[in-house]
Amino acid sequence: MTAAATPSALAHINTAVRPGALVKPATPPTPAASPLSAVVAVINHLIVGLGLDTRHPAAANANEPAVSATVVSANALSTTGSATVPLQVYSDTEPLVDISIDGGPTEPVLVDTGSEGLVVGLGNIGLLHLFSMGLPTGIGVSGYSGGLTYLYATFKTTVNFGNGIVTAPTSVDVALLSFPQSFASYSADDGATGVLGIGPNASGPGPSSVIAALPGNLSDGVLIDEPDGVLVFGPNPLSARASVSGAPNAQLQVKIGSGQLEPVSAIIDSGGVYGTVPSSLTGNVPAGTVISVYSGEGQTLLYSYTTDQTNTPTITSDDLLNTGYEPFAQQPVYFSYSPAGVGTTTFDYL
Image (cartoon, rainbow, N blue to C red; front, side):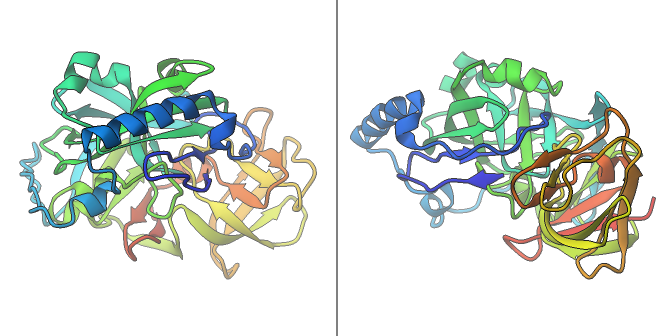
């Protein structure tokens, strides 16, 4: 995900590799280029007129007492251990988990390591329920390069993952308007109603990951275990095979076909579908090509696969390799929130 400059405290414009799409990241839009910019300006004026706090939610609440949440897991797991919820994979590539926002209905969202922040459509919340959530803490415009731009408002509320796993009040972005299609229909392509961005050093839209609002050690990180069909919150419960600095953005090495091992900036992206490869590394990835991805020093193989007619990365003109779903399908992958703002990606033994 690539974030553009922030024109104001209430107008954030970001672009992202769309979860569930094979597209090149688009050039970040500017406020003048988007029809929603005028809407943002009007709402910004109204919010200022109403005297709402327009600071970043974290700064706005820095002096407020912390609100705790009690976890009473169905599996009797304490906040000093880990907690588990079911994970399902849609269309072989899209990891989904069910959540409830502010006590509302339970809906599936895409578990996306390539972004940060929970974004859901208005249909996930419901208009009447939205009114009961109070005033927004911020408003902005974001988008995915798959072809969607949306106006969102940020609310402070709780997120329930089931099994008694509930966050403290945290930031949730609700898409209010979008073009050229609705946020609901766009997300439905992934079998979801929203995007659960959990990448510690991803670009946005933010302002934070809801995982960080879980109580106790449950906020340490999250394990995406597609082979076993579970999402695990807390310390890594499995044995680590290899770790790299950064989550999802990391420095790796890649070998494509008979080519040389090459250093590359990579995004370890559970929502990246079949991934992308920079054109500087290769101009073509035909079916039957073996792609092997290694740790930054080139000594440890993280994953390897052979492309076919469907599972083949898109060639892009940028310098970023997007792993897509492949490493997650092969093994459990743990995203640690330490060090803060950077994170660590760990590839576990099965």
